[in-house]
Length: 243
Image (tube, rainbow, N blue to C red; front, top):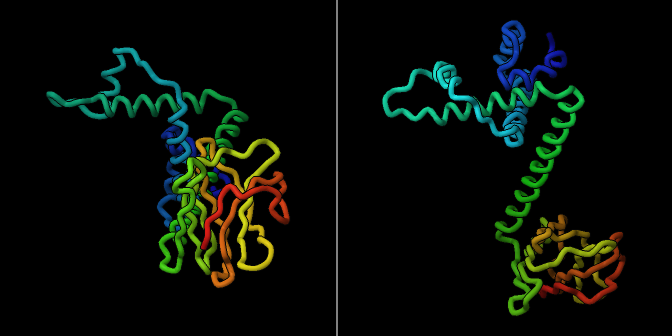
C-alpha cells in the first residue's frame, strides 16, 4: 500500500488499534526516514494527545486493576501503579471516544484539532518574528504611557524588520471599529501601518513588517478607526510613541 492509502490509518496506529497486518504494513513505511507516513503518524500522535484532553474522565471498576497491572508489569512492594494505570485509562478513553463516533464526527474532531494546530503554528511564527526584531541591536525601544492608567507599553522600531507594538490596558475595539497604527513622519501626513485588535484582557502585540526610514520617522501612533481602516487618522491618538 502507498502512503495515500495508509493515510486513514494514522490515527488508529497512534492509538494502537490497528490489526497486526495493517500495523506491519505501516511499520514498514515508518522505517524509511523520508517516507511521508513518518510525519503523518507524528501529527496523528499529536492529534490524539490533543484529543485526550477532551476525552471523558474514566472511573474503571476495581476488578480491572489486575488486567492493567498485567499490561504494565507486576508491581513491586511500594511501587505506585497509579501513573501507568492513569495512562492506560486515558488511552482507553481516547480509543473509545474515537471509535465510538461516526466518520463525520471524526472528521469534525480532526478539523478542529488541525485548526488549533495551525493557529499555534501561526502564533509561534509571529512570536519568533517579534523576538527577532526585539533582540536585534539595530532596534530602537520607546516606552509610552508610563504615567497614564491606559494604555501603556513599548514600541520597538527596527529599520530593516519593521515596528513591534506591545501594549496593555488597551480595551478591545468596539464592534465596527479597529485599531490602526501610523508611522508619523517629521514632515507630512501619517502613513498607515496596519490594523489590529487587542485581546479580551487588554493586551496587544502587533508587528508591522517592512523597512522603516528612521531618519524621517518622528513617532509611532495608534488611533481607533472604522473596521475597514482609514487612509488618514480620524480620531485622537490613543498611543503616541515619539522616536
